[in-house]
Image (tube, rainbow, N blue to C red; front, side, top):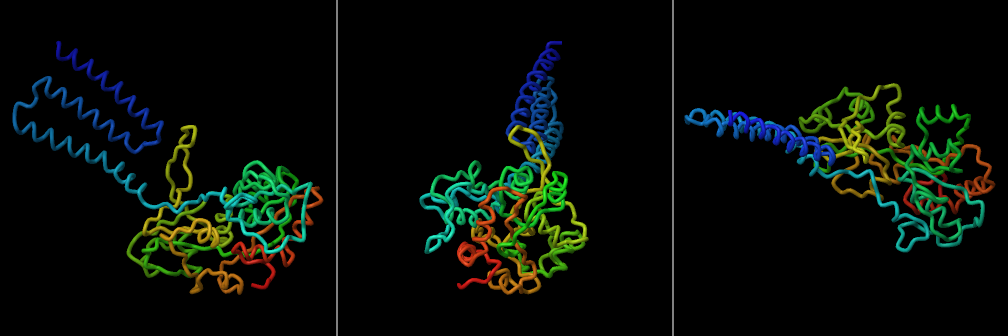
Length: 384
């Protein structure tokens, strides 16, 4: 009777301890360790019972207990070990230090003109927002034409809130102009529902690029192969001249500039579901979202040329040639690279009198020269 009473007490103590450890794992987002924690707790309790009730009377029982325990613990540790391996794989970051591109800051990476801009604004400054990849452009435009002061990237006349938020800010009348790629169908629909007409003014050209791990044997794909990969028709690198490995095709979040570019490229061809993973939000809520690109040797992702080469600059990936043409400034300028698109200043009926003045300046030889100097291809030809 005493042994049973002791076993019950130990059971509840172990349950309480296990619950606490599991709760901590949930709080810090280490969900993959929960099965291992539970199995290990069960192992400890059974081990305690075995000693308490003198189960290990024969060598055979000891061997069976050890074998079963080792199998159970090993099986429960496979997933967390794999997750640790995945976490150690380099991530092609979707983030850059935007503070390095703030206008008028010391040691800023923002490019400057050799002469003073022909447009100088002093008041009624148009409020800008836009895509992270285009921040170096409109930050440089602000530095050339706006008065010198601090422009916080998230709360000033020169903000950078990513493409989806920039469109939302424009549609809701919070900003005067945004620097982005073309809107998605959902963004166009939201503008229509708000009674807002989006005006797109092309100011430059950029290449939509696909990239793979530097160790991938494949150096290029055709447009049709890209479509077949992202529709799920081609599933192995062997089908396009690589190793016999499954293709891990990453995507970007809905309404982002690069995801809209992929949708435009695919046309009527349905896009397959992206790799997904559970992640913890800042408030501990579990959400499912497009997996952040991890540089597996069998992975493929996409972005824009300038962003990948100039802002992120990851030497562990390589940009693929498309239809035999590599994405360079020269092939973008000539139109030879097949996935070349325009990027825009987008407005939505602002009453700010300086918006049209600023757009005219950006399209002027001086403004286009600045876009060239940043590293993009201007919409109008300028002297090198």
